[in-house]
Image (cartoon, rainbow, N blue to C red; front, side, top):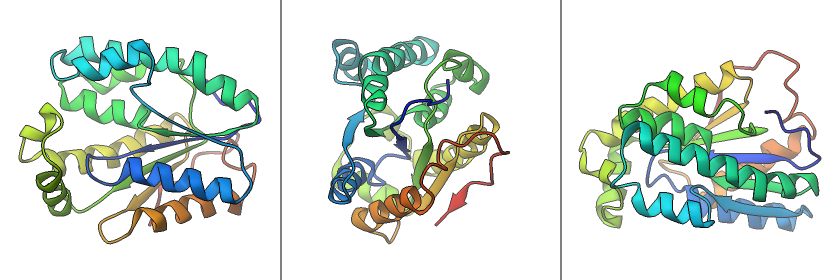
Length: 219
C-alpha cells in the first residue's frame, strides 16, 4: 500500500545498538525546528496488542511471532499512522518493515512468508537503515546489556548487518526508497541531520514510485 496521504512516512531500522531510538528523537526535534508537524512512534506499537507483542517476543517464536508482529503493524497503520499522515504530519517510526525482514529471518521464517504477511502494509516514503561495524555493535551491546534472545548469539551483530543490507535490496524490489547510514563513528545528531537534509533536499520526491527504484544510498 503506497502512501497517498499529504504526510511523509519515514521508517528507521537497523541492528540493535546502532542508535535508532536516539536518532528518531533527534530527527523529530530537528524537523520540528524546521517547521514540520512531526509524530514519532515505534513498533511494536504502544497499543494493548503492541505491548503484548513486545512482552512475548522472547517466548513466541518463528511463524507465530511473525504473524503477531504483522497483526500489530496493520493495527498500527489503521489507528495511528494513517490518521497522522492524512493530517499532513511527518511520521517517523522506530522499526518497521525492514526489521521484520531481518528479525523474522533470524527466527527461521523465510522472507517470502514475511513479505506475504506484509503485502498490504503502508509502505514508507523513505526507509532509513542504520548500520555499524559489527565489532562496534558488539561493544555497545555489552555495555547496554542483553535485552532480547537474539542478543545471545555472538555472531548476531554480523548477521544482522548482512541481513539489513539484503533487506535494503528487497525494499527496492517493492519500490521503497532505502537510505543506508553508517553510525560507527557518527553521532545520532549527525545522522538525524543527514536524514532531515535528505527529506528536504527534494521535497515531494520521497513518495515518487513511478520511476524505477535507485540503488540504496549509503553514507
